[in-house]
Image (cartoon, rainbow, N blue to C red; front, top):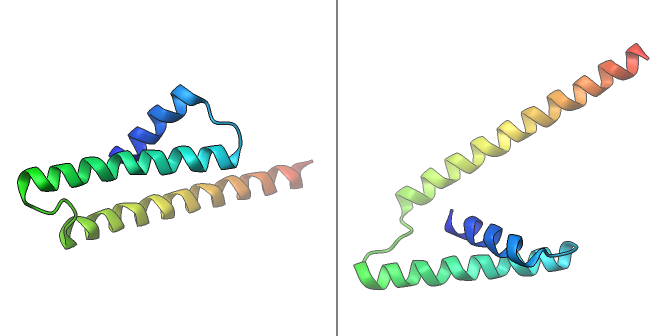
Length: 86
């Protein structure tokens, strides 16, 4: 989540234009998160990413993708119905 927040904040400040600039901002946001993760691991002596929380994250991401696909399918079906009515 920190990578996403960092990327959003950098993007709001710099207003990237186009795909390439957005990719560069995303990489910078990811770098900020990586630095924070390494600093936290150094302070605590514990890994931030474990098998358990990686599995939980995978589950959440899968749910988000499935929900997005369902929504996209519903929107597409809605558009098909509107075309038939015309």
